[in-house]
Image 1 (spheres, rainbow, N blue to C red):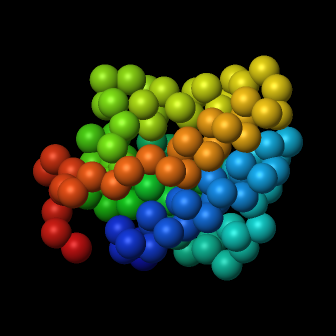
Image 2 (image 1 turned 90 degrees about the vertical axis):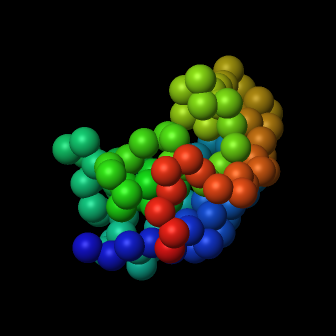
Image 3 (image 1 turned 90 degrees about the horizontal axis):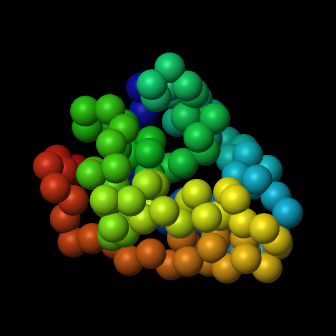
Length: 121
């Protein structure tokens, strides 16, 4: 199993969400950047392939103790769902303008200095 480094996971996360902010009609699996990452993307999480989730940060946390939002290197409000609730807002956005704005917000979330219980890598 390949372990994705934190800096690469963050870089790919930003590229994915930048593309989604510019292509609000698209879904995560449509991102052309997923070509070539099959060794990482097809690992499984909770019985679902990471490719189903298409999240490099979920994949990054998977290598600790299984995917868990508390290990996410971004700094949203962890009392809310994924990425401080922004992911659900993006999924359920009523129009492309809102969807683009939510994708940009997800892209631009700040990185935490250190995630709780995060192993050094």
